[in-house]
Image (tube, helix red, strand yellow):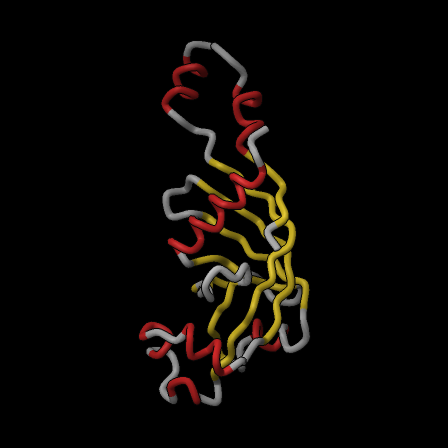
Length: 159
């Protein structure tokens, strides 16, 4: 089995590049959200409006799930964690950008503005085991695809 740290590092690099994930709680189906990152902190932040179901479900820390698929489909993850509201003005200021501003006419002081913080816990991460070599081996009847795939999935702690 590959080093689990490698899986975690690939996850962090990929999600920080792609910035889109599905986030939900026990009471709210996952919704596509744009991830924001505050330096090297291992918390994932999302701007939303206070009147959304997701914000309402996070007024107190709630169990949550983040589902991620890399743009190139070379990495997938399901991450369990906690979702909570974090309306720290200094953090909002650091994470604020023109894309977020487009959604909030009142800017950083918009009364609808809500910053959510996802604290990741355990994750199951899959790397795409498809490759030209794997395809050729399968075509030629060489090797076992299940055996080739076993090093492409790991359960890791992200938090």
